[in-house]
Image 1 (cartoon, rainbow, N blue to C red):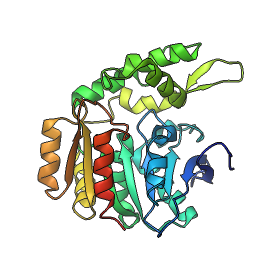
Image 2: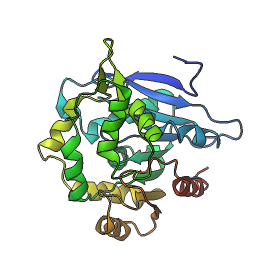
Image 3: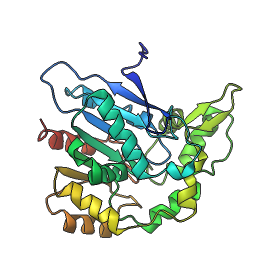
Image 4: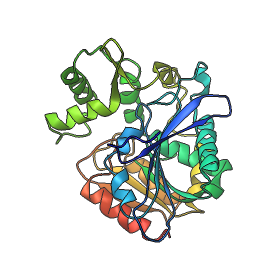
Length: 294
């Protein structure tokens, strides 16, 4: 479906288990064909998180696919919450690329999206031309995980866009202390939807919180480190991290550097978890990194 006032086309596809999943497809600017980009959002977010950076990337001559992972955005919810895990998500993304005829892409993964990217390296590494891990790695800080577990799936009811903006600010102001009221209202429009009766809802299935609430998401694992090494030692990889992030901190960065000495590492100052990628420092890093990928 093409919506004329939007800079993208909505794509839908069926997962292997029958869910209807959605993605935004931004056409590249005219010029020589370049490797496309796949953008994958964080735990409670959706494809709209990339609405500021995707057109900028497309203007550089790259097709950009921004996905709604199952249970988020316009993708269908899964009746089996056990399927809300990176192995299933990776299969969904690989299936989308097959249907679109994309043989290789640059992956930009924010938080959970980076975990999905690392997971794809275990079985679908041939699809990954390069990877950007946005404030995430194979080892995570317990401080950040505890904060995320404290809010995911437990949002308070809101009845106006201003209340939705206040809710977003209450959760995320620690990471974006410089944001204005207008920024939080924009954030609310990315993360909340309205029901037919005018009531508001977060644009994700509350069941995605079950695994983290039950403590199934750990700060590290042998499989995560293996997946990261398989990715970062074999394809060009860059870590972007927020200078005040509580999920990727100095010990995690040091461990990633030790496992992948050639990985590029860039700090986005004065931002927490996770950079929105429209920051000046983030876009300068992305431009330099993408220059090495045809």
